[in-house]
Each structure stands twice: as structure tokens, then as C-alpha cells.
Length: 252
Image (cartoon, rainbow, N blue to C red):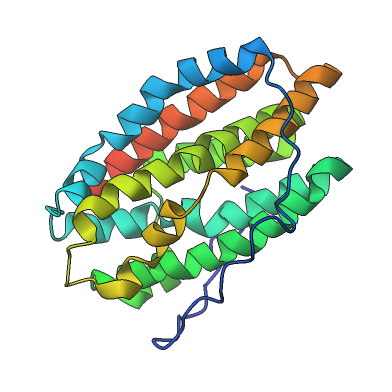
């Protein structure tokens, strides 16, 4: 395993508000190049699996403001290792990145660290005891498999495949998850504004992260280090593992 799970995140200050999001177009600026034909095939292959994630019970229940008490608390804790360790996976990618991706990963790491605090704030909104985040619980088998997959991809896969499995697949579906969940949770007075920070932050995304990730993937394919079939397969596997881990976490 890449990281020790004795890691204890700082306890969020109840008065904490995340700093303003950076002005778009600074570190995140990217020149979009014409898509080769395989990009449309990539997205067509991934779309049913993206939709399957949006149709998981936890997202459907959130969209209808019908989350099951007890289940949502377990979900937030069980899926937390993916949120917690995402910045560290990005750090591995930054260390491996060619020059064209370094500003992207540097900015993305900073953003994802803020999202960790926001996830725990969402836990506060649903009355998850802080200790459950501070003292890691054993990972569910499905979450452990997804976690191990992302770790392996970031450490050892060809770079385009690592970015496809992590940034294009996972980050690419986060906006749609948040948009759908907020249809119901925007009306949930119980969790309050702090409980919606993570969702609202991701719902604001204009897809810059996956757009930039795709440019990196396209460059890797162009240089011959990855093939369209390879970057498609790893993204597909990532989405399937994500779906299974979300379902298992909600029914933990």
C-alpha cells in the first residue's frame, strides 16, 4: 500500500470557510487541440458507465432528498479513503508528469486538499462523528479494490493510462454526480450550507480538469506511449470500480 492508514486529518474548524476558488484561466489554462476520432469513441464507451454511477442508490436518493439515515453516514465514512488520498495520487502523477502537465497537477492538488475538508464538513452536516474520519475504519473490500487500483495506476501504469483512470474517469463524473445530488440536497435544511460545500464546489466545475486531462492523454497517445484502446479500458475499469465502491459504501 502506498500510504499509511494511520493518517489523521486535521479536525475542521467549525468557523472554517474554504478560501475563494482561484480565478479561472491562470494555472488551469489549456490550449485545446482538435480531437482525433478515437476521443468520440472513448466517450461513447464511457457514457453508459458514467450514467450507471448517476443511477446508484446513493445518488438517486440524494437527488430526491430521500437519503436513508444511517446509510448516508456510513457512505461518507466508507468512501472517504478515496477523497482523502486523491491529492496523494495527484502528487505521484505530478512527480511523473512531463512539463505540459505540471501546472495542472500542482493546481489540482491544492483544489483536492480543500475538497477533503469539504467532505468532512458534509459529514458534519449529516452528524457523522468526527472520530470516524480521524481514526480510519477498515476499508470495505470494494473500496479497497478501487483504492488499490488507483494507487497502482498512478504509480506504475503508462502516464496516459494513469491520467485516464484518475483524472478523466473519476474527476470527469464528479460534476454530474454533484449536479444530480443537489437537486434534492439543495432543499435539505438539516445539512445546511457547510454540508453542501463539496457538492456545490464540484457542481461549479466547467469540466476544466477532464479537459486538461484529455489533452495530456491525447499527447501520450500521439507520442505512442499509450494507445486509444488502453486509455479507454483503464477509464472504463475505473468507473466500474467506482460504482461498486459507492454502492457498497451506501449499504455498509
